[in-house]
Image (cartoon, rainbow, N blue to C red; front, side, top):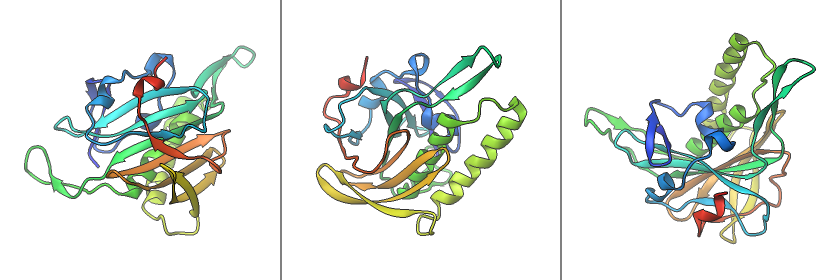
Length: 231
Protein backbone atom coordinates (compact mmCIF):
# COMPACT_ATOMS: atom_id res chain seq x y z
CA UNK A 1 0.00 0.00 0.00
CA UNK A 2 1.94 2.99 -1.27
CA UNK A 3 1.15 6.09 0.73
CA UNK A 4 2.63 9.28 2.04
CA UNK A 5 1.71 11.13 5.19
CA UNK A 6 -0.19 14.36 4.79
CA UNK A 7 -0.29 17.21 7.28
CA UNK A 8 -3.79 18.51 6.92
CA UNK A 9 -4.20 19.10 3.18
CA UNK A 10 -0.59 20.12 2.64
CA UNK A 11 2.87 18.60 2.79
CA UNK A 12 3.87 14.96 2.61
CA UNK A 13 6.68 12.65 3.63
CA UNK A 14 7.44 9.97 1.06
CA UNK A 15 7.32 6.29 1.98
CA UNK A 16 6.48 3.08 0.13
CA UNK A 17 4.89 1.76 3.30
CA UNK A 18 3.72 4.03 6.12
CA UNK A 19 6.37 4.18 8.82
CA UNK A 20 5.59 3.32 12.42
CA UNK A 21 5.54 7.01 13.21
CA UNK A 22 2.92 7.60 10.48
CA UNK A 23 0.39 5.57 12.37
CA UNK A 24 0.58 7.08 15.79
CA UNK A 25 1.87 10.60 16.10
CA UNK A 26 -0.28 12.89 18.19
CA UNK A 27 0.13 15.63 20.73
CA UNK A 28 -0.32 19.38 20.36
CA UNK A 29 2.74 19.80 18.14
CA UNK A 30 1.55 17.26 15.58
CA UNK A 31 -2.20 17.58 15.80
CA UNK A 32 -3.60 17.60 12.29
CA UNK A 33 -6.14 19.95 10.75
CA UNK A 34 -9.44 18.69 9.42
CA UNK A 35 -8.63 19.66 5.82
CA UNK A 36 -6.92 16.44 4.78
CA UNK A 37 -9.77 14.36 6.16
CA UNK A 38 -12.29 16.30 4.11
CA UNK A 39 -10.53 15.24 0.89
CA UNK A 40 -11.33 11.56 1.47
CA UNK A 41 -13.92 9.81 -0.68
CA UNK A 42 -14.78 7.37 2.11
CA UNK A 43 -16.31 7.79 5.59
CA UNK A 44 -14.12 8.17 8.67
CA UNK A 45 -14.71 6.04 11.75
CA UNK A 46 -14.13 6.62 15.44
CA UNK A 47 -15.44 5.32 18.74
CA UNK A 48 -19.21 5.53 18.96
CA UNK A 49 -21.24 7.88 21.17
CA UNK A 50 -20.91 5.58 24.18
CA UNK A 51 -17.41 7.02 24.53
CA UNK A 52 -17.59 10.49 26.07
CA UNK A 53 -13.92 11.36 26.55
CA UNK A 54 -11.51 13.56 24.53
CA UNK A 55 -11.23 13.08 20.76
CA UNK A 56 -8.42 14.34 18.52
CA UNK A 57 -7.32 14.21 14.90
CA UNK A 58 -4.00 12.65 13.91
CA UNK A 59 -3.05 12.50 10.23
CA UNK A 60 -4.02 11.10 6.85
CA UNK A 61 -1.96 9.10 4.36
CA UNK A 62 -2.13 9.73 0.62
CA UNK A 63 -1.12 7.89 -2.53
CA UNK A 64 1.39 9.36 -4.96
CA UNK A 65 -1.40 11.06 -6.89
CA UNK A 66 -2.72 12.77 -3.74
CA UNK A 67 -5.66 10.42 -3.17
CA UNK A 68 -6.40 9.97 0.53
CA UNK A 69 -5.93 6.30 1.41
CA UNK A 70 -6.12 6.10 5.20
CA UNK A 71 -6.08 8.13 8.39
CA UNK A 72 -6.39 7.93 12.17
CA UNK A 73 -8.49 9.48 14.91
CA UNK A 74 -7.51 9.45 18.58
CA UNK A 75 -9.47 9.01 21.78
CA UNK A 76 -8.41 9.50 25.39
CA UNK A 77 -5.06 10.94 26.45
CA UNK A 78 -2.62 11.63 23.65
CA UNK A 79 0.57 9.51 23.84
CA UNK A 80 3.57 11.71 24.59
CA UNK A 81 7.10 11.81 25.92
CA UNK A 82 7.87 13.30 29.31
CA UNK A 83 11.22 14.26 30.75
CA UNK A 84 12.28 12.43 33.89
CA UNK A 85 14.36 15.00 35.76
CA UNK A 86 15.76 12.41 38.16
CA UNK A 87 16.91 10.12 35.36
CA UNK A 88 17.84 13.03 33.10
CA UNK A 89 16.13 11.57 30.03
CA UNK A 90 12.84 11.34 28.17
CA UNK A 91 10.61 8.35 28.82
CA UNK A 92 7.49 7.15 27.03
CA UNK A 93 4.24 8.14 28.69
CA UNK A 94 1.54 6.41 26.59
CA UNK A 95 -1.23 7.07 29.12
CA UNK A 96 -4.74 5.80 28.26
CA UNK A 97 -5.73 6.00 24.63
CA UNK A 98 -7.41 4.27 21.70
CA UNK A 99 -6.79 5.12 18.05
CA UNK A 100 -9.09 4.13 15.19
CA UNK A 101 -7.55 3.70 11.73
CA UNK A 102 -9.79 3.94 8.65
CA UNK A 103 -8.41 2.46 5.41
CA UNK A 104 -10.11 2.86 2.05
CA UNK A 105 -10.93 -0.45 0.40
CA UNK A 106 -9.01 -0.34 -2.90
CA UNK A 107 -8.68 -3.04 -5.58
CA UNK A 108 -5.43 -3.72 -7.37
CA UNK A 109 -4.90 -0.63 -9.54
CA UNK A 110 -2.37 1.12 -11.73
CA UNK A 111 0.27 3.28 -10.11
CA UNK A 112 0.09 7.05 -10.64
CA UNK A 113 2.87 6.97 -13.27
CA UNK A 114 1.30 4.04 -15.11
CA UNK A 115 4.41 1.88 -14.82
CA UNK A 116 3.09 -0.71 -12.39
CA UNK A 117 0.28 -1.74 -10.09
CA UNK A 118 -0.50 -1.03 -6.46
CA UNK A 119 -1.51 -3.78 -4.07
CA UNK A 120 -5.13 -3.97 -3.04
CA UNK A 121 -5.87 -2.85 0.51
CA UNK A 122 -7.30 -5.40 2.92
CA UNK A 123 -7.91 -6.11 6.58
CA UNK A 124 -4.18 -6.86 6.75
CA UNK A 125 -3.50 -3.28 5.67
CA UNK A 126 -5.54 -2.02 8.62
CA UNK A 127 -3.81 -4.48 10.96
CA UNK A 128 -0.38 -3.29 9.77
CA UNK A 129 -1.18 0.39 10.26
CA UNK A 130 -2.62 -0.32 13.69
CA UNK A 131 0.32 -2.50 14.74
CA UNK A 132 2.96 -0.02 13.60
CA UNK A 133 0.96 2.80 15.16
CA UNK A 134 0.98 1.08 18.53
CA UNK A 135 4.75 0.69 18.34
CA UNK A 136 5.23 4.38 17.58
CA UNK A 137 3.07 5.31 20.57
CA UNK A 138 4.79 3.00 23.04
CA UNK A 139 8.43 2.73 21.91
CA UNK A 140 11.03 2.46 24.69
CA UNK A 141 12.34 6.02 24.83
CA UNK A 142 14.86 5.07 27.51
CA UNK A 143 16.89 3.07 24.96
CA UNK A 144 20.03 4.52 23.41
CA UNK A 145 19.11 6.07 20.06
CA UNK A 146 20.84 3.52 17.78
CA UNK A 147 19.45 0.58 19.73
CA UNK A 148 16.00 2.16 19.71
CA UNK A 149 16.02 2.41 15.92
CA UNK A 150 17.11 -1.23 15.61
CA UNK A 151 14.33 -2.22 17.99
CA UNK A 152 11.75 -0.20 16.08
CA UNK A 153 12.84 -1.64 12.72
CA UNK A 154 12.67 -5.17 14.10
CA UNK A 155 9.31 -4.73 15.77
CA UNK A 156 7.82 -2.96 12.74
CA UNK A 157 8.87 -5.86 10.50
CA UNK A 158 7.27 -8.24 12.99
CA UNK A 159 4.05 -6.19 12.97
CA UNK A 160 3.92 -6.54 9.19
CA UNK A 161 4.43 -10.31 9.37
CA UNK A 162 1.68 -10.64 11.98
CA UNK A 163 -0.70 -8.49 9.92
CA UNK A 164 -0.16 -10.82 6.98
CA UNK A 165 -1.13 -13.87 9.07
CA UNK A 166 -4.49 -12.96 10.54
CA UNK A 167 -5.63 -16.58 10.71
CA UNK A 168 -2.79 -17.69 12.98
CA UNK A 169 -3.37 -18.43 16.70
CA UNK A 170 -1.68 -15.19 17.83
CA UNK A 171 -4.92 -13.50 16.69
CA UNK A 172 -8.28 -14.19 18.30
CA UNK A 173 -11.78 -13.23 17.22
CA UNK A 174 -13.59 -10.31 18.85
CA UNK A 175 -17.10 -9.19 17.94
CA UNK A 176 -17.73 -5.45 18.31
CA UNK A 177 -20.51 -3.20 17.00
CA UNK A 178 -19.85 -1.06 13.93
CA UNK A 179 -22.70 1.38 13.36
CA UNK A 180 -24.71 -0.86 15.67
CA UNK A 181 -24.06 -4.04 13.67
CA UNK A 182 -22.02 -6.85 15.33
CA UNK A 183 -18.80 -7.15 13.34
CA UNK A 184 -15.98 -9.67 13.57
CA UNK A 185 -12.47 -8.37 14.21
CA UNK A 186 -9.12 -10.07 14.53
CA UNK A 187 -7.55 -9.12 17.86
CA UNK A 188 -4.22 -9.55 19.63
CA UNK A 189 -2.54 -8.24 22.77
CA UNK A 190 1.11 -7.62 23.59
CA UNK A 191 3.11 -5.99 26.35
CA UNK A 192 2.71 -2.70 24.49
CA UNK A 193 -1.08 -2.74 24.16
CA UNK A 194 -3.69 -4.24 21.84
CA UNK A 195 -4.43 -4.22 18.11
CA UNK A 196 -7.52 -5.21 16.15
CA UNK A 197 -8.63 -5.13 12.52
CA UNK A 198 -11.74 -5.86 10.46
CA UNK A 199 -13.96 -4.45 7.74
CA UNK A 200 -16.98 -2.16 7.78
CA UNK A 201 -19.69 -1.03 5.41
CA UNK A 202 -18.98 1.92 3.15
CA UNK A 203 -15.90 0.46 1.49
CA UNK A 204 -13.43 0.70 4.35
CA UNK A 205 -11.31 -1.52 6.54
CA UNK A 206 -10.91 -0.62 10.20
CA UNK A 207 -7.94 -0.99 12.48
CA UNK A 208 -7.56 0.12 16.07
CA UNK A 209 -4.90 0.08 18.74
CA UNK A 210 -4.69 1.25 22.30
CA UNK A 211 -3.29 0.98 25.77
CA UNK A 212 -4.90 1.49 29.16
CA UNK A 213 -8.38 1.38 27.57
CA UNK A 214 -9.91 -2.04 27.06
CA UNK A 215 -11.00 -2.99 23.55
CA UNK A 216 -13.74 -5.18 24.98
CA UNK A 217 -17.01 -3.31 24.96
CA UNK A 218 -15.87 -0.69 22.45
CA UNK A 219 -18.02 0.26 19.49
CA UNK A 220 -17.27 2.11 16.27
CA UNK A 221 -19.36 4.43 14.12
CA UNK A 222 -19.07 6.83 11.21
CA UNK A 223 -17.87 10.26 12.33
CA UNK A 224 -20.69 12.66 11.51
CA UNK A 225 -18.88 15.83 12.51
CA UNK A 226 -15.10 15.95 12.29
CA UNK A 227 -15.17 19.21 14.25
CA UNK A 228 -15.89 17.10 17.33
CA UNK A 229 -12.28 15.90 17.04
CA UNK A 230 -10.75 19.35 17.13
CA UNK A 231 -9.74 21.31 20.23
